Amino acid sequence: METATILKLLGKVTIFEGFGPGDLEDFLAQTHGSTYATDSEIFAEGEPGRHMHIILSGKVDVFRKSGGRPVHLVKLGPGETFGEMSLVLDTNIGRTASIHAIEPTATLTIDYENLARIPSVAAKLYRNISRTLATRLKISTDLVVFQSQYGTDVPPSATLGKPRRKPAVKSAGG
Image (cartoon, rainbow, N blue to C red; front, side, top):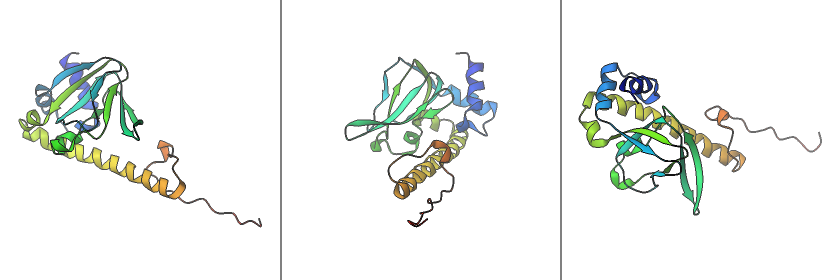
């Protein structure tokens, strides 16, 4: 993919909000490209890692294991990111989910050490990662609240983040 095309894509990625063209160029200079075939593992839950990916093309499945079975969390495509937590958490924590390519996928990868080489860009990226993680935490909290109020069914994603009321209980007489 051409540099101009990659820069244009990065400019549309939420995690790069507030970045100027120079910031994106500095960021791009510290990344490397990776490609993954369909059904290949990008990384596994629990393994160490200190790098984040930005999807340029393709799709990935994000999942965790529960009771030995995969629990699919989300599918991500071009312009979306994964692995952000590894830039923030200690490497001994390990990956919180597994990522598999579900079609041929190309990513840009940046690791903790290379990001540290561009401190002004890193500060902006960490601010945006904080916002992304806060949004994800809010969604997770909403799911826990929903499950505690209504049982274990997962609500439609359109309802996440919106106030919920318990359904009115009808009396037996009418």
